[in-house]
Amino acid sequence: MSTKTYKFLKSKYVICASIILLTCACNNEIDNCNNDVTDKGWKAEIGSGVCIRKGYTINMVKNNFDYNKDGINDLAVRYTLYPIEDGNLSYFSLFRGVQNGSFEFVKEFESIAIPVVKNMNADYYQNHPLADSLSKNYPLDATIEFSNNQLLLSMKLSIEFGKSYVFEFKRSQKEWKLSEIKFWYGKIPSWYAQNMKILPKYITEKKALRSHEIFEGVNIDKFDLTSEYKKSIKKDVLLLETNYQL
Image (cartoon, rainbow, N blue to C red; front, side, top):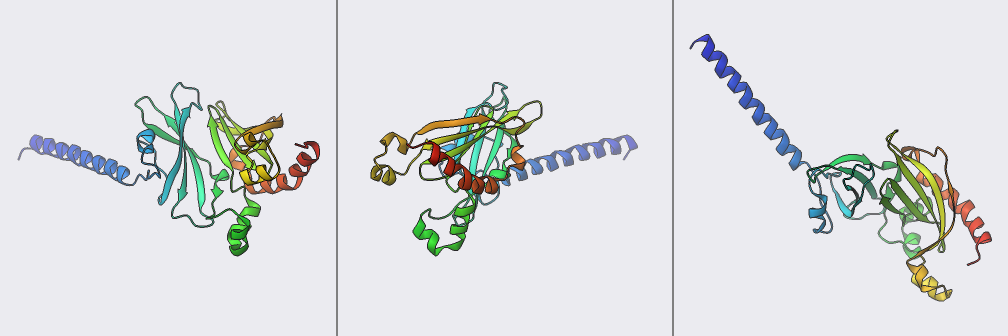
């Protein structure tokens, strides 16, 4: 075999081997992508590129916002470890929409991961110490919403009153920073509303009470969910109950 022929065959072999390795890597990446959902209808909405932690299942999808204002809708998902056990965590991740309709991972908001429990009532807590402890340290019924460049973390502080933290995406710094705190009344359990003769609309709706802007607020990665919740229950509830007789 001539040297020229040998070099040609060698280079051809290297190219083929590279293609095989690349194909295997791509297939392996696809195989390792977990995008399980509780609602099969969401499969079409999440498209490609949305992968979450192994063993977790997506149970919320939001895709009608544009956090970085590039004209393409982005995607946020919540996912929880199943089967549900007291202390399992619900995480939230953000994915950036790209031109071809797929998504690219941007961020998992670990600091605001929320524990779940099998049942949220006093009787259950009395017989399940872990669930009881979690209920005293975390806002188990907290919700997270995305609206363009804002992330809204809302939690109930008492049966009647609640508090929301507004985090805003700062494009120049590529950070989510606390920009506003809001207090509200509502989202009241139906049994309580009926017993206390509270207007039915406040079972599902919120009434804004007051808010204040935050200058140079904390980065969401350094936000201490437990500390904020416990501090708010001790101080804010008393102030709200004193100032707002609703």
